[in-house]
Image 1 (cartoon, helix red, strand yellow):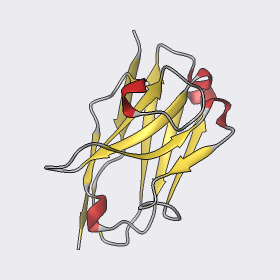
Image 2: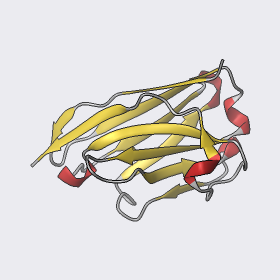
Image 3: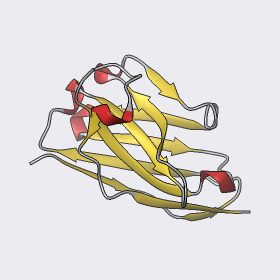
Image 4: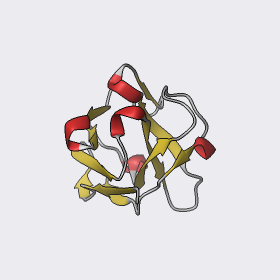
Amino acid sequence: QVQFVESGGASVPSGGSLRLSCAASGLFLDYYAIGWFRQAPGKEREGVSCTSASDTSTEYADSVTGRFTISRDNAKSTVYLQMNDLKPEDTAVYYCAANLMRRRCGGAQHEFAYWGQGTQVTVSS
């Protein structure tokens, strides 16, 4: 059974940092592009960042470019999201998922599966 578990969320002040982890089990992580997404209250889920299979490329939403860094450790079956200079607008539940249709980033959300329960990030002003 494939399972993704997100962790590392917390409440931090504006300007703070967090590192989120996405631990995968039941699949060979290296085969898949992995995305981080977030959903704020009353808003649609949006893509935040993606790392392609074999870690050959990464993508970021404009709103987090320069502040967030995605990385992966295939040996540990874990993908990380380092978040620096956090802002109140980063407050959301953060999810990770695997793209089952392509190994490179750029896919639509419906291509992603194995969504975890999410981890809450709250940034206070």
